[in-house]
Image (cartoon, rainbow, N blue to C red; front, side, top):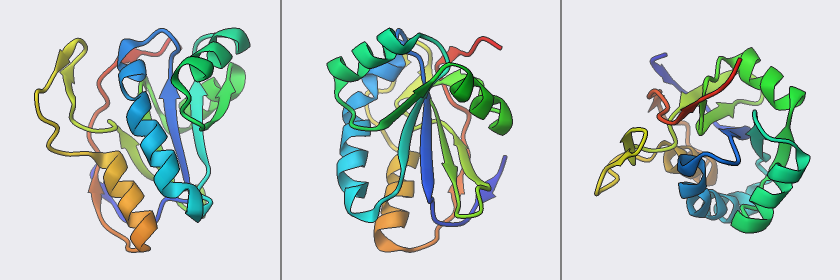
Length: 150
């Protein structure tokens, strides 16, 4: 996809309640919410699998504090922006144009294979861009995780 520039005005993460990689990222998602709370940046977890009970149970257990959508609404959003993996990060600008779609960070090199040290964190780059109100280029990287069902 290349590099995009702009400030994120809406951030989504496509999720699946049973995906261990999604579960792994919940502390980072909580931290992102805390950092962006003063900036009124809408944060939404879009569950492309699971029903309302499994999504609510996920949030009760992991307490991300993000807005939750699921079912057809989440699947339509994934289709609209070409998301195909959970977890997958999506950032939109004020015109609802895609700034970034891809991995959250480089913690995973493949499903089940985690790096000992995280070197690049795309969600942190997006967060700092919003906090500093400074446009920066963020290179899109493929997401690693569970494939979504079409």
